[in-house]
Image (tube, rainbow, N blue to C red; front, side, top):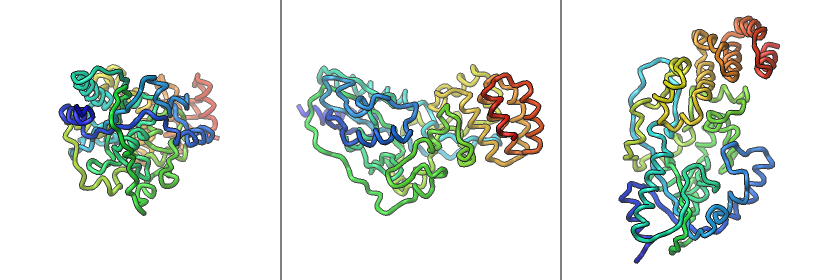
Length: 366
């Protein structure tokens, strides 16, 4: 019985687009990179802090023999436009149903199919695992690294979700790490709005718009104006990539943005309740950070529209119960009309009860 080929066949049956295999040997090649990254303060709050767990699969599953990596394309065709005026852009990764659910469902179905062939131990992850999923995918042969650090698959391009499964299965696995095919192209580097791509295969995550739209950390002033009207995520470097031209499109209906059409109504976002937000948007990937983070991003988007009329939506947010919202609202008023904003914010400081917000507002109007 060729178990590996049977797993590949079963993966197709459960609608997994791409599958690859690699050993559970530690990713020693990444250790120095991770150490330097930590020393430079470029770790994000989303990643495993134990560097040994980040490179050694056995620390997560001691009996690990083989890692099964999967990829699912989310590059769906959709061209409908939302019919409201103040549109905030959602990246393709948050167009449809939360991909964590979709990938986990596909992986669970594959696990059940493998169990019919052979009993085995496993752990599976979508985004939440300690290992670097892109490094796993690369070593498993799913795709090569683009200069924007995305994994690019020859058939599907880079709009692919990744997951992996640690198993104690013993399979015949060769070295499948593919080399980059980017050549001299630098379109992604040139197009990056914040210059987070600091060179080929070098990304500063703290400047990446995709990260900024998700982070709870204060967004530097100089980066806010580079975010455009993006509410969640950023597809700029992938959209300009030639390797995403003429590729096979996704047929996964779960990723079609039937509800949002790829946008969020910023005005609605400011005034719906938490319950209404969860009821309407709770099934999309971008909802995981909660309404307040998306509201903050919406405030930045209204500033970047450079329309003073947006003050009518921003000024009421000075009374918002969330301190972060009040802070960004004050900044936004000053950006859209400094003289008017200085008067309004100056009055608000007198009654602001959060010392952190008050200190920030005082710095803004000095």
